[in-house]
Image (cartoon, rainbow, N blue to C red; front, side):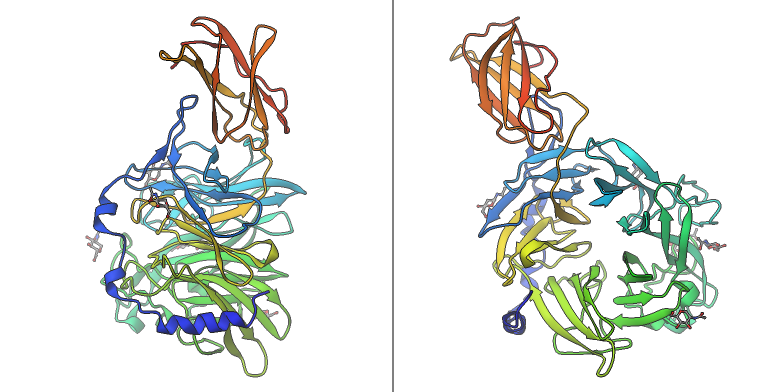
Length: 508
Ligand SMILES: *[C@@H]1O[C@H](CO)[C@@H](O)[C@H](O)[C@H]1NC(C)=O
Ligand SMILES: *[C@@H]1O[C@H](CO)[C@@H](O)[C@H](O)[C@H]1NC(C)=O
Ligand SMILES: *[C@@H]1O[C@H](CO)[C@@H](O)[C@H](O)[C@H]1NC(C)=O
Ligand SMILES: *[C@@H]1O[C@H](CO)[C@@H](O)[C@H](O)[C@H]1NC(C)=O
Ligand SMILES: *[C@@H]1O[C@H](CO)[C@@H](O)[C@H](O)[C@H]1NC(C)=O
């Protein structure tokens, strides 16, 4: 539990000088390419993960979808705490990667598809620990009459890129966007204007059956356009440039109710199964609540209940408070609020956390995850940096995987994982001119618990070496070009799995 000392830290924030001079990264950095991890035994590449630890971190791997903006590719990936790549999937557009439990088994869910500017049209893939797709959740665009800004382009599935949260009922919560007509008169726009509505869907994971649908715009009487903080900026006159309201970015289900986050409204709301509002917390006006000292938030990501009772909810979130249409002068922090549901109806600050030595002013995206022992994992989205905090709010890990504006990930979560790849380990054996030794390089994408590698030549074990990261390099004596070796995994769930036979000198 966060203690009261966090409040003191939070109040210190107001003394913290935040000058516009700190905006963004140093220009020199922004123009250079971030280093990639490359390997001899695999064509896979992934960003170098620069991990600095200041204390003990919680166990588990980091799951993220690094998007290399400068090289224009992205992929789902898993890293160990020492910054080593553990698994990387194929290239494409990915988002909302999240390990979860399905039927008592660990699985990994992520969105992939066609990426628009801050929204998308795609499907959720669910992979087992062997990295096989066991379910593909889709939302039929035609039967739901989706209208997109890309008309007349057709999409197979209209799930948006923001959410992939499972419920306990075998369903998944996702968002969707739909272009529709709206009266924008209240905010100075056309009466017969266009918006990109935000929708919530609950879908059965195995059958794709829709269990719940909710549209923000169908509740505009309860959640008025005047609550939107994103400026109209000339949008809304036609269906290819609709007003981007309300930009939903996370959904969780608590009991029968849905906790929904609207980025452009700076709103967190609880919705009943019949679609009506139970309450609405607005980050600037308070909505149904009164905002206490230091509790205002905006453009937030990943709000969830840390605890819930009939009297009070404790809500955690990643508070960006910056966007492409604001300055980048608001400090991005993790934030935990106590919200009194009865009586005073006051929202008060429980804790706030940020990396004072390397503060972030994230423009978009992000995640906030509560780990064991009161630790917090915070991801900064457009600023490619992940932080872990201990229960006292002290930073224990800082991990950077790109310069600002060169790399990003929508979310990053830490989870334990035992990978059982169906592939074989990959190896190459390359003679080293100088020493006369042979360098054997071996990797096994997605294997998490190999302890060591055995190099077999014929029926003889010629060498054994401890596994060392994604790729282990092993210097071996007494092998000559044209000879063949087989590398074998020792330890873990893949114990005894062998590579194909590798000819010394081939594929180097
Ligand atoms: C990695 O982090 C260390 C410690 O902060 C720093 O000295 C080094 O320059 C960083 N490397 C890159 C490529 O940013
Ligand atoms: C990724 O999204 C872009 C649009 O931003 C699209 O052109 C491309 O086809 C998508 N890639 C895949 C693999 O779906
Ligand atoms: C999308 O909007 C159109 C009107 O533009 C409407 O006919 C359709 O039902 C909407 N679809 C969804 C999923 O809300
Ligand atoms: C839609 O509106 C935008 C902004 O007002 C404008 O730039 C664009 O040309 C319009 N598109 C069409 C198809 O009229
Ligand atoms: C919808 O559900 C809420 C919460 O259960 C209830 O208070 C409200 O009366 C319901 N509204 C309608 C129109 O059924």
